[in-house]
Length: 576
Image (cartoon, rainbow, N blue to C red; front, side, top):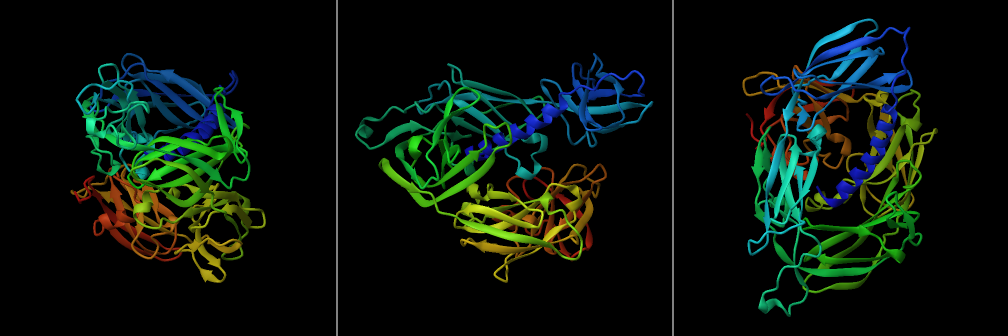
C-alpha cells in the first residue's frame, strides 16, 4: 500500500468512524413497560467447533432515530445471551484478542429482533489469528534496530472487507520483530529503516556523490514492490520472514512549490504538533516514482520542501490539500498536479521551482432519460484522471478524485481548478433508490465522451444524461465440481471499448447459495469473473488481459438482465 493511499484512507476512515461510533455510543434507555426481545447463541472456533470464551458480542442497530448497541460476553463454553433488546434489525459484531470473525462462515450477521420473542441457537464462527515474525539485518548480516516493519494484505482492493488489514511492528536490539493478530491471508512485508540509518561506505565510495543509505525493502529483499513475494499466514500459525534491507545511493531533493493560491499558514493539530496549511488547508507533497518508491512530507512555510534521501529515478510530484480539517467535519480533498517530472540521477537536485498546474473549471447539467422527477441533490460528481499508460495506472491519480461537487437542485454542477489531463466523469449516489440507474450519456460540445473520457479544457461544459434502465447480471458461482460457492468475489470488466469507464467495473459477493446480483450496469459486452481472493486491482489495464478466457462473457442491453454460471478462479489465475 503506498503512502498516499494510507493517508487518504486514514483521513477518510477517521472521519467516518468518528461519526459511526459517536452515534453508537448512546445506550438505549430502560423502558420497563416496553416489550423487548432476547438474542442468544454461541461463538465457536473454526475449524474445530469448540466454544470461545471472553468474546465481546455486540448488536448494533437503530431504534427510531437513535443508534443503539447491546453487548454481552461469552462464557466458558462460548455461550452468550443479550436481553432487553428493542425490536429492530441488528448487525452482530465479534471481538476477541487473538481471533477474527470468519466472514465466509458467518454468511449473515444480521439479526431481526421481534417484540416479546427470543432468537436462539445462533452460531458464529471465529478464526485464530496468525503471526509474522523474523529478523531484519544489514548488508553485513548484523541486526538493525528500530526498523518499521509493515504487513499489508496483498489481496486486491475488491476483496478487502474485514481483510483490509495493515499491521506493523518494530525491530528490537536483536533486529527481531513480531506482528501479531493477523487475519489469515497473504501479506506483503516491507521494512523501512530509520531515516538516519546510513550504510557504511566502502573505501572506494567515500568520495562519491550522494549518501549510501538503507531504504524500504520488501520481502524477500527487493526494492521493487512489484517483485515482492507475498507470505501466507494461516490460522494460528507463525510465518518467519527473515531478510536484509538493501542499501542504495540517495540524494537530496529540495525546492519550492510555486503557484499556490495562498501562502501556507501554521495551524496546531489535535496532538499539538504544528503543521503547515496550504490554501487554507493542510498541504502534503508527494513524490511518486516509477520504481515504486514514494516520499511524502508536510509542505513547509512559503511552499518550501526538502527530501533528504531520494533514490535514483523519475518522480512525479503531487500536492494534496485537505481543507476544513479543523472544524470537526469530514475534510474536503483537493489534488493539484505538477506536470514537470523530477529526475534524480547521480547528484542532489536542489533549488527546484515546481509550478502547480493552472486548472480550469468544469461545469455541466444533469437531465433524466424520460420524464421522471429526480432529486438531483442526492448525486455527487467527481473527475477521475485517466492514466497515460499502463505503467502510470499504478500512479496515485487513478485512485484520487480530482475535485468533487454536489449536484444542485436544478441538476447543475461545477468543479473548480481542474488540472489539465484526460478525465472520466464519475457519478455517485447517496441513496439506494438510484441502484438501477446508470450514466447513459456525457456530451462535450455535442461529442459523446461517456466511454472515452475527455481532455480537460478551461470552461468545459458537460451535458449528462442518467437513465433508470440500467442492465443487470444475476448468477451463481460454482467450483470445479459444480457446487455453489458462498462468499465468492464477483467482478465485471469490460471486454472492449470501455476500459476507461469507471462504472464498467462492478463488484459483488455471492450469498450462502452461491447466488449474486449486479445492478445498474451500462449496456455492452463484459466478462464476469469470480474469485476466492483477487490478487491485484481488477480495474488495472492488465487485469482483463491476464484473465482473458477465464470468465463468462455477457452482452447487456439497456434494462435487460442476463443469467450466468461462473466458475471460481483460483488465486493463481487458473480455473479450478
